[in-house]
Length: 278
Image 1 (tube, rainbow, N blue to C red):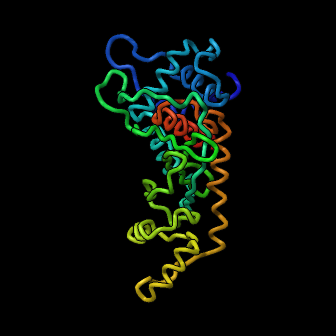
Image 2: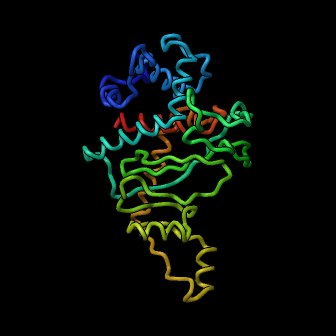
Image 3: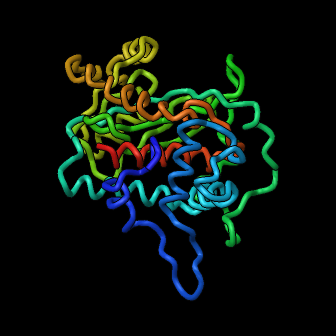
């Protein structure tokens, strides 16, 4: 077993949920070897064609990653691993923190074909396809932004990618409702607060100065001042530590793929690895 490969314990937890070979003739080659190849490329950031031969043909490894990114297999595996952890009581739902980070896009990430991609062997679009390919131009050039929700143990609950110049989205809570949500000023909006109140989720989000002035200017129509718990807000470092763990993978810290759904699959696989390790 090479450095960074799936351990026996990690493989035992992941294997039951992987796609099975059905019917005559094997459709899939060894899942463990191929996934180890995907993890090796994700950790090192090297081109697919430069994969060591111990992982088999590079095209097989790339096609498996692209297919599972397109048809939602990585997303399904992440939800399954999270569900297993929830049953074992290993998810800290006391505080869920949300934040975003910008990833520099490599020059090879630009120039995707304008025609719509499709799932291999199926006449439909990938699950996480974005027409803008999640590329935005900012001061540093082309960038992609990763929005993340993490639990109290610094592990990812939900992942969303947008162009780097895109503002913070309306964030929906994870599959299981947390007790508390922490976010920075970028997530301070009436829509977000109203959504959290409707779901009876307590939240700690600081109010920007311009929103505060606007509310005071409207008088009684501006509503009540937003509550803020400084002690709870200190726990927002948990999502920053989760980003730090995800960006330990070079293919996450820098985007190399042209297609947004492939990069989304790369980030999702990095999240799966964190859940398998801890």
